View (cartoon, rainbow, N blue to C red):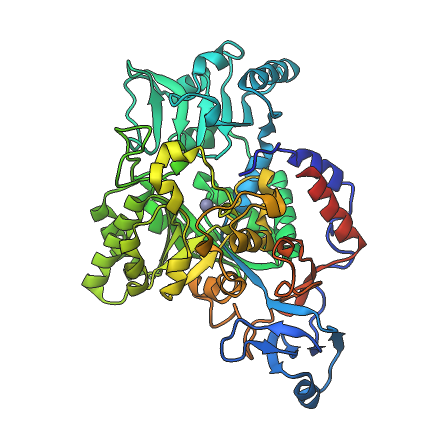
Amino acid sequence: MKKKHYLYLVLVLILSVFSIYWFSDEPFQSKKHSTLLIKNGKIYTSNPKQPWAEAMLIKDEKISFIGSSKEALKVSNNVSETINLNGKLVLPGLIDSHTHPGLVALFADVNPIPEGSIKEKLEWLKSFNKENPDLPYIIAGTWFWEDFDKNGPHKRDLDAIVNDKPVILVEDWGHSIWVNSKALEMMGVNKSTKDPVANLSFFYRDKNGEPTGWIKEFAAFPFLKKLLKINKEDLEFVLEFFLNYLSSNGVTTLFDGGNFNFDNDVYEALNKLDKEGKLHHTYEASYHVFLPEHINIAIDELKKLKKKYQSDNLNFNTIKIHFDGIKEIRTAAVSKVYNDDLHNKGNILVAEDVLTNFIEELHKEKIDLHVHTVGDFAIKTALNAYERATEKFGKLNTKLTLSHLEIMDPKDIDRMKKLNVVANFTPHWHGDPAPFLDDVLGERNKHIMKAQPLIDNQTIVTFSSDITSPAEYNRSNPFLGMQVAHNRQDIEGGKTAPIMEPLSERLDLKDLIKGYTINGAKQLKLQNKLGSLEKGKNADFIILDHNIFNSDRYDIHNAKIKYTFKNGNRVFIRNFKANVNEKLIEWLY
Ligand SMILES: [Zn+2]
């Protein structure tokens, strides 16, 4: 969520003159090796019983041996290819256990507003509207709520520029929009319209109850779904590009944290890519619940998606709930009021009873649950619901993951472990002390995003990038996430970047790798197949150009992948073209 332009379209233009294999000169689906031997390496396995090895044999997409180079040579026969690692580091393929390739692709169509003051942004809107008279609507981003007082932006400023077609301006955090009167009119929203969820997904109003045009969280998505025209080719193009970018950063498995009501469009495109042999990830998909009424249809909708799009690489076994909002726009559900808004505690999507009943249904259907929980009240309520269902049924078939966990009551730490709930963090957020949030959260701002107590308590902790727009492309790199969480400092500013207290939250590199590998596999219930380098598991691994265990703590994010292997096939090869493309992305973002 950096304050950067949407330069994505420029990137797409430049890259479209390159061949389809942007990151490689060779086809991604290299032929199956009868046996591949890799030797003389430093192989970190994520298997506590054998943390390090030197060599691996890969046969029929699986690891058939892992151990010393000497032993490997003894047991190998019919080796068709040998890679001499010369001491290079190998890690298991990385797992991004909460991200949004679909949203990255959908948001590629959002027109970039140049950085500047609100006045300058409105000037931009004026000329953009003049230059594009035939557009049926204008969607652009981004702007910052910090540029307004707490009543936020107002529709009248947009109406003065465009009043004959809907204008939708996306806020930088992606959790609210600013619209003009025409958009509200087309949505059928007026003074008497009920908010979907008060203090969470709602139409901000003036003192007379009139909607101001600031729409928080997801109240407008049903309208956006009707309005936005999805170009299938563009969607596939960007999805493929982003997934290849993830491969080039070592990601071989991911969980899709939801696409709002665009799930069907996104999974249709992914299914097509898979059929064309272009999906090189184990892709754990989800159905996205973001309005209360979705709870009633979620299980059926997930089953429909599964029936239509399930494939070898694309799995549907999880429902994602956006249970609260974000602290920045005061929609996260907190147990004590916001310091600068004394009547507001944010809100949760549905009451504890409703969530408890839903978890019981999921248990019967053996479906997993992934819940967005930022505020302490949201975390506590989700744990209460899961605990109540557990008391009724004993061990549940539904694995629960709580993501973000930004403001957490220390009393709930033990319950996470006791209930075997997975704690999912987004480590590239763990380096921004955000002093402006002191006004919003008060003392609470000094105790946010703390993973260490959960790690110390043996909870399964996983890590992810939660990327939702092309503007954050480079932050999907897990090594960037590792560095930020290892230092509690952002990448920008290097050694001198401000530290996000407390220093006891500087996470150990091995805990970070564990969270990006075997623990990610446990979250997705794939630990018998992948997540560590062990005999019989899928040959998902990456070869790095330098050893991050020995590197400077401010250089971890510069680790470059030489090869990414998925099921024993090379899906990324660092060559000249890969380097050129990477430089282009660095230049643009
Ligand atoms: Zn997310």
